[in-house]
Amino acid sequence: MAGALRLLRTEKTFGLEAAAHLLLDQVAPWVQELGLLVERIEASPPVGAPDDWAPGAVVRMPFAAKLCPGAGAGAVATQALMSLADTAMMLACATAWDGYRPMSTVDQTIHFLRPVAFDVLADARVIRIGRTTTFGRVTILRATDGQAVGMVSSACAATA
Image (tube, rainbow, N blue to C red; front, side, top):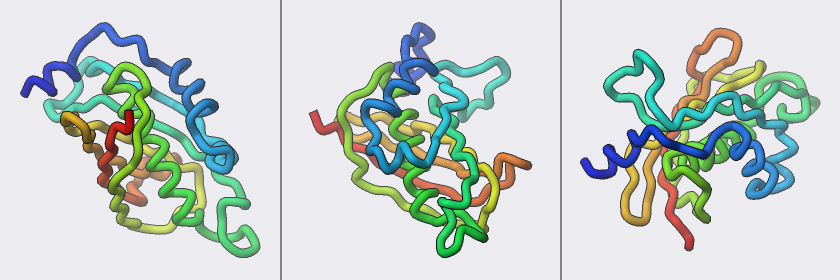
């Protein structure tokens, strides 16, 4: 329960600007080529938040033909969706921790629900912060209508 209380601090400094810098400083160049955009950082519960609200980040991956296997027609490659989810979780962790800490993904389980050929959003939320491991979930959504196209569970371990 003490971890939950830490998450609900209202004075946070990690926000959109810090998240944008993090994408440039801590993300591999080939992931940067996905063109990810940080849409929202939620460090504190918004007005009317549900009881199960958790801190996190929402990241957009704009649709591009280069993200599709083969000749560029069809659905976004699953590898791109996994990279989106992993990057969104890194930002969610930094949000919950109120700043970036060196970390490594130690587990990522993803379930693809349907193919997508549109912009997608990754809504990443931190569920629990442990002593060395942080656990989270990411919902991957079609940006056009909010329909879920994937769901991810993640665990990240601090490396420093």
